[in-house]
Amino acid sequence: MAAKAALYFTVKHNSYICCMSKANAIVMSGIRPTGFLHLGNYFGAMRNYVKLQDQYTCFFMVADLHALTTHPDTKELKENVHRVLAENIACGIDPDKAALYCQSHVRETSELYLYLNMLAYLGELEKTTTFKEKARMQPDNINAGLLTYPVLQTADIILHRATWVPVGKDQEQHLEMARNFVNRFNHRYGNVFPEPLAYNFGEDLVKVPSLDGTGKMSKSENQLATLYLADTDEVIRKKVMKAKTDGGPTAPDSAKPDYIENIFQLMRLVSTTEVIAHYENAYNDCSIRYGDMKKQLAEDMVQFISPIREKAESIRTNESYLHDIMEKGAEKARKSASETMNLVREAMGLHY
Ligand code: TRP
Image (cartoon, rainbow, N blue to C red; front, top):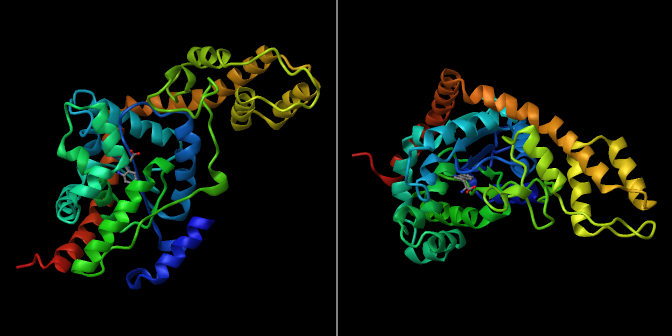
């Protein structure tokens, strides 16, 4: 709720969007087509996007241009874009409700990106955490696209004059930069854009721990400790059975070590309340058998993930359906983008 209250506060101070209410708020988010979606993406993002699409005008985008900053080889791009789209739909994003589209299909993005580049300073771009990290990871390819990544992301967002951007903590710096670029644009050329803010899910933001007891599930790190939405039943079972446990509690009602708490946390995401209560009691009276608990968790994970995987797979292999979806999404996005770009060119005095 804090984020929403903060947003309304900002809104009051921006004369251009003073009439904004919840009903006409615009939500925008992007996902890079690099790596497979996992359970953390599902509970941290997808599940919440599905709720948002019923309440707001939503733009959900596959950031294929951003992918080029780190993955210049485009051989696998098409397949990855298709897979991410299919996975998003399988998770419940409805292309009839939200605009689900591909970044490169909306050419206005590139035009706005160009204008915004003139408002972005080398010093601030070089200081960006993600830039420094990626420059370290690929010292032979520190390209200008990598440097201006946050400028492109800003273009994605403000192209729809979106105010709410549902993203994880790692994107907060990019949003802060987006607000700076917006303020510079508005100050120089006149109020066109509202300030975008991170949409904070508060209590809906559940933690999805990794299976090895260290940190969260992640797209690229420790793949054996992460459950992907594309994992087969056999792989899911294998990964869950490998989760770290110990000899069990030795005194009733004792505190749980982190790695055991993680297993309970995963169970809370996918198991029934009866099952969870059973293992909580068994833990508290020291009768728990972790082997049984993990077998139960593995089966519940299979029950949860397999329908998503199968749905995604059938969508992924239906190219004509995917093509139609992308075209429908791009049309909605282009309509909103061209309205904004008319305002931008007008404000900048680019009408001769
Ligand atoms: N940078 C985001 C990420 O790495 C992806 C992204 C691209 C994005 N454009 C966006 C997120 C616009 C929100 C809004 O996850």
